[in-house]
Image (cartoon, rainbow, N blue to C red; front, side, top):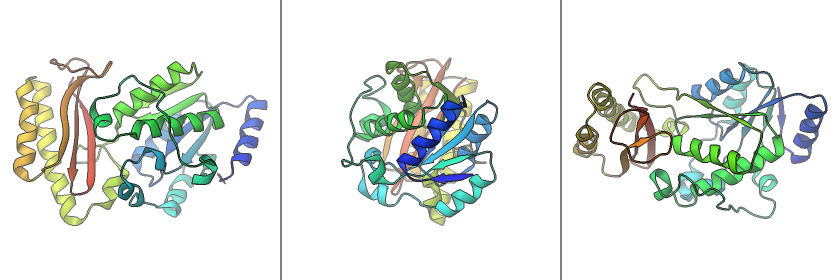
Length: 277
């Protein structure tokens, strides 16, 4: 396993891979590696190619400075975890290397916008598509691996690849869920003991209602989730919506639909989505 920090070095490595007709599997992360990230590597192992993991906490996609500053940094633990996988290259560029002219982002993808997280995290997806395009141009993968936890992000990246006519296969990987039924997230490692207990209760409320919706789909059920969460003390809820997973339009049936949810436990934003079929 090789750790690369310089743009010039990663370009030379990629150039050599291309000369030798080696395919590349890219797994972009912001570090704080957990089983969800490792599942992406496991999925990558099913394909030919050299696995490259990037670790870069992208300031351009944070609309909250405190959120960026508080994002967990577990570099040494990350290296130990990745050393036990079939990861050949870890690309860990500096902020200055990625943004030599200063941090900036551009809105290039307009599809799947103006809904869900895009309404509440202004500029977030512009930052995401900016960094993903930078990484794709640098590393030139044949396959790109993303989890379904951030489902709107997944759809936007799919559109980014399509509209730039990139010959990249986007591999969509199912969310890895904790025993409480919620998708794993790096941010949850910052929960206090009390916040963890609150999160567990919220998980029970959400998952019991999702189970009911699968058995007997009724839009009144998902509306009751908000009521139960607010009764429990969750005051800041961004959205609880049922949408079709193909086009992200509102849905009134469970076929090809998911429940999308985003709320806060104190300062930690919880986002998830659940299959309803």
